[in-house]
Amino acid sequence: MSDSRLLAEQQIWAGTTEGAKNQAFNCSNGDFFTGKGLWKVLCELFDVDFVDLDDAEKFDAMEMMSGMGDVWDEIVEKFQHVCSMNKSREFGFVGFYDTFKSVRYWVGKMREMKIIP
Image: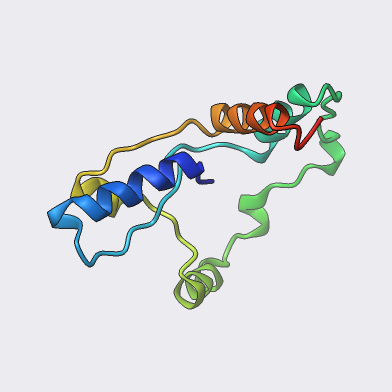
């Protein structure tokens, strides 16, 4: 996930940093989060009860994707769907946003602007 404030900071950095000239950079908040954690935050913000998955409905993604490494490699190669901030960091950009705090901030901002209740 990318907070637009971080994206703006990175764009300004890339446009004003000599060593970053003519380079392409990925941008993401730089943290790791789970969908479950994100849903918990959203439920809290919208005053909705969070209901965890029933254990019977859970699945083991590692088991399900076992032996599918070649498929994932092909998807990554074809669509370039890997987001890493490593290159940005190597070039000197070390911006970071906590995704859960970002979600709280933007929901608050949208409420302030009367976009959402």
